[in-house]
Structure formats: structure tokens, C-alpha cells
View 1 (cartoon, one colour):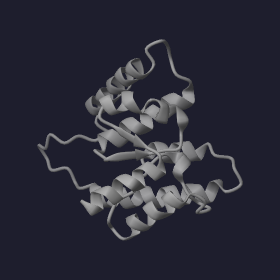
View 2 (cartoon, rainbow, N blue to C red):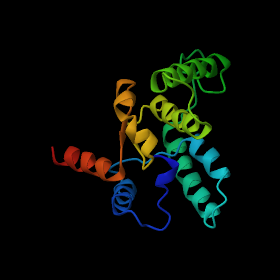
View 3 (cartoon, rainbow, N blue to C red):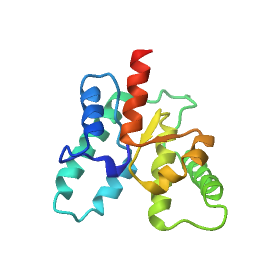
View 4 (spheres, helix red, strand yellow):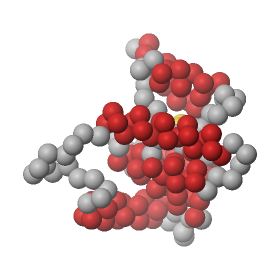
Length: 163
């Protein structure tokens, strides 16, 4: 989920429903570390509440999906220098594909990093209201990421449940 989908005031009905499905264990909403970084820059009146909600989402996914890595395992973490270097190369490749005519602004580069982490976690759908990302959904789909609005994501979940 993108930072702009922290639904603190419950103003977006589709996000309300996605959160309800998450609470019921039907879906799982994930907050990447990049979301937490984004929110540290937030100076809005409700910034602390948004940070707390994101922290809870991040802890929930981190606690459920992170297991100790057994010695000799090929599984790596971002603390591993080789893995970190691979992520950097992946980010550069994505930026070249998504912005063939030049560099994105800093905000867009942060968004792409957020999506890259999301993909690395093998999440199904990246939910956002960011028009820059939504406008690049075809390119992102070619890179293995499905980008949807909250309403589109909810419809995909409903379709999956009913099939």
C-alpha cells in the first residue's frame, strides 16, 4: 500500500473495506519501510497518527512474514551487501524503463523504490492514489507489479473471493 492510502479519517470507502478484509484475515495490507520513511517527512497536523498506523501495518507484516534465516540458506536480507547491491541495480533498471527520457523527480524515485520493495516482498497488488504511478501502470505491469486504485483493488479482491 502506498503512503497516500493511509486512511486515517476513514474518508475512502474502498480503503475502509480493504482494511475490514485485512482485519478479518481475508487479505493482508503491508506497509513497506519506505512508507515509514515517507511519513517521517510528513508535517501535516495528523502526521503522528499516520505514522502510528503505518508502524502497526509494518509490524504486522514484518512479524508474520519474517522468520529467522537458517545458516547456509540462500535467502538474503537487505542488510546483506550483495542483496542491497542487487536492489540498487534493480532500481536503476526500473528507473531507466519508467523514465527513458530522463530522471524522475525525487518524489517519483521514492515512489519507485517503494514499489520495488513491494515487489521484492512478492505482494500481489500495490494500492495507490498517486497519479504518477497510476499513469505508469502498464510499464509497472511489465516489471511484475499490479498497480491499482483502492476501488480497483477492492474489485479485484471481490472477484477473487467470488471465483
